[in-house]
Image (cartoon, rainbow, N blue to C red):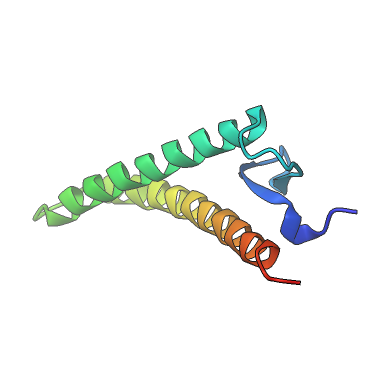
Length: 102
């Protein structure tokens, strides 16, 4: 039986907002590569959004609607980034467990 620390948290959720997991030993398989690419895109979008946020916040006057949209986008990017960090942290933990001498 697969234990929870052997499952990879995927960078997307199901239709009901619940987390999706992948159980595989093949880190170069199609689903693993797809997840890696989506994680990379999410982190890239978060970086670009952070730059945009810094520009908007540096302006003397910013429209409240622009700030609301920025907050919504930053919240989504933070959620995605935390999911990526959690997934990668779990995989690091499982690798270090796998490498312990028995």
